[in-house]
Image 1 (tube, protein in one colour):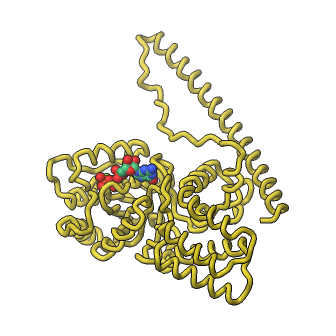
Image 2 (cartoon, rainbow, N blue to C red):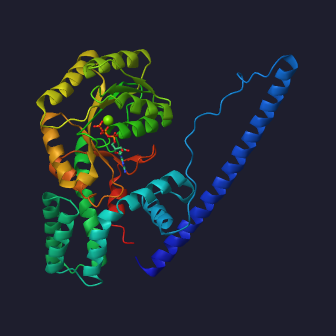
Length: 409
Ligand SMILES: Nc1nc2c(ncn2[C@@H]2O[C@H](COP(=O)(O)OP(=O)(O)OP(=O)(O)O)[C@@H](O)[C@H]2O)c(=O)[nH]1
Ligand SMILES: [Mg+2]
């Protein structure tokens, strides 16, 4: 980026910041006004009730359960970078929301560890000089260390080598080319699937199964998906088909409560997960549910009986609602790096998967594993999680991901 470019970016970002600040002030004032009106109403109601008999608060509407909007943070590098990423994707200055800035900031921070041992070193090594065959060797080592995987690394390095044979490539152009190549790798399975962003089909029953080994974040991810779905006005229901872990149903109910989504469960000991899904489908049909989210127990891909259980769940779905749109999403914990990749490979063999969700991208140095999943398991990444909060999950956007992974500050 030249100085003028970066001056322009800062100026653009500063205008976006001022706009958001103004909007936030207006919203705050509006909320305050509503609160005052409500209190006034409450007072009048109490006075009325006192005249008749003792006060009765039953008719006063309860404060609705809303998830707090994030506060606009400082006007700093994070803001400028996030605003630029949005602008590069065609967002207009007045279309930017605090939520989006907040998420991109989280994503960039989340990938900081991956970036640290990678871009910083890379930039140090490259400096402003043109790329040399030796710097490609360094890059190769760095990519492998960031868990990008051998196949993806080979692909990127050989494209760079071809380019180097044809022309002189400066450090900055090298990074740009690298970003493009990495994006191509991630985008390939997404393009092949024919669906850029996974959303439930309106007016149909969509069933999304969340599968994966123990503790990778299935239940948490399901909770965040329930929030995204109900916020986007899809009728949503949760099936608690993890009947293995005693506390699983309670954990799901907490998430369901946060976004007002019901949970279908069977509390009896040794309940059959397929039977819970059976009940949930009945309920979904009655209520015209558009998205049924199914939580499943953590299982090792090597345990045949547990893998059979997944097939049984799928059979029930096929039998009861053959025209439902089914997604089997493998949840992967990014911090497990190559281990996660191994899991993905075995799962893909025994469970019929249609996509992956990468979690715990915050605070791991192994974010590169997302590339390996795309290249070596050929699964489209559908969502990524970077935190334990309800809003810490977003549809996967390869441009944002690669920009965050290779951000230069
Ligand atoms: N930092 C971070 N923690 C996460 C994220 N997603 C989930 N977790 C945490 O990971 C732990 C396990 O999450 P669960 O959702 O219970 O995982 P699970 O796959 O359902 O686990 P089992 O049902 O036992 O197999 C919890 O402490 C979550 O808060 C994430 O994106 N970032
Ligand atoms: Mg769970």
